[in-house]
Image 1 (cartoon, one colour):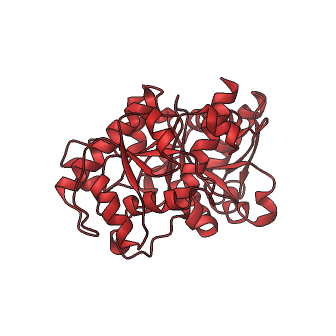
Image 2: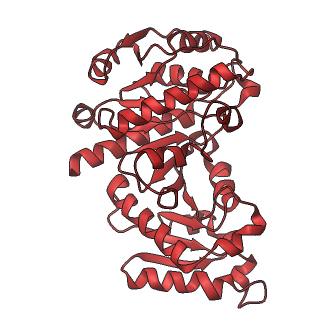
Image 3: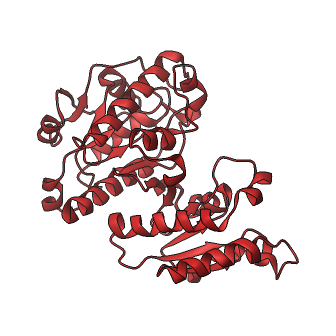
Length: 341
């Protein structure tokens, strides 16, 4: 993002994620790499002592400065990592607990509120442990659903996209058993998600006419009904309807070939039928730089496409690439929205 674009937008609000995971140390690492990695100004929500301890565990020195507002954070970012709020917790890497879950939830609530109110230009969320959060009042399947509700958007219209340097994928169904997927698919679902994705790719990624590749569900795209008829009954009619609306959609494409290098050049995003169909190729290609982007929201929201990684927290082994990519992508999308109103 250019210096001029940075100057037009407020800092990003970054939630800590679970304090016992790798989120806090990667926030610190992202600040250290801010110039080389072109990271836009951001503010961490809570965790002054936590982040300092997490940074020390990686052997990096990070000056940390408490701030009272987003405006103050922007002025501080060049010399220190700004932290908003006095919420904190001890750094116990790999030892998740209720106190840490409460901090993660409070950090997420505050960061989301700042983005919804327009004080932060975008929201970047750290990885959480959902089971522990449930014990402190978090009653959502994940952060995406929480953020969508805070924005007044139904969960069905908050579309997950996984984005990396080489590929963008959108799972049509997410955290459901594979056996349920065929019964959840419909022409309306595919059309609705594809419309939201196409609009977001134009608004936030600057792609004037997004090319959407729609994956098949069954091997060989069903092979004319031999291996399943979802392609004939559902997916192909949805593609035809999208094309009639003016959306550049193609498919259904056999998934075993859709992610080959020569095929990836033919589309801007692949709409996949289920979770692993979308995430396996993305993680195989862009594991350390994958970003989870929520499309269809009135705010920009991104997250690194990895979990808490409790097993390596505090060891210095966690790669900051996805966190840096999530921050940079959030800043770029926010700048495009600011430029176009």
